[in-house]
Image (tube, rainbow, N blue to C red; front, side, top):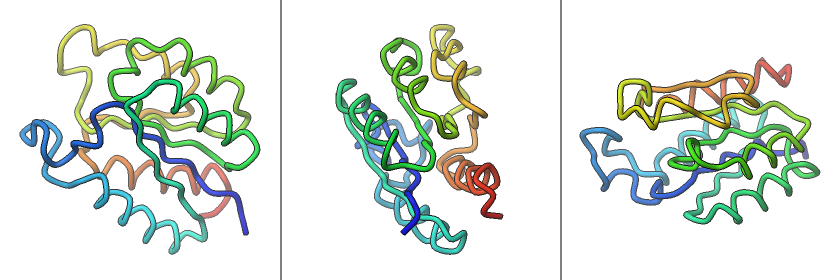
Length: 147
């Protein structure tokens, strides 16, 4: 079987659908994972959807993806703006990386305007709600030659 696309979600995304639905919507992370799994099947891909509130766990999954994954779609949550360690881990990954944000981080507080991850990512999708994950998976299929 082909290597999966790792879909990594950072802190507080376990509360998706409950936390600030006016910003993040009502869809849960389980809903997002189900949509991605269905689309991955259609695209001839597979996904491994993971979430952690802990920076070290996200880094461990990025390291695992070095040998087990074809690409990484990451929504690092607040670690976007603070984690050089996640940036360094992504730099050790040879495959494509796409960064996703549910809200438009550039319309929010000034501290959210900078992303350490963006310097490593092939692309950034922000402000499209949870549909951003679907767009990212479609782009990942393109990057991997699975149109």
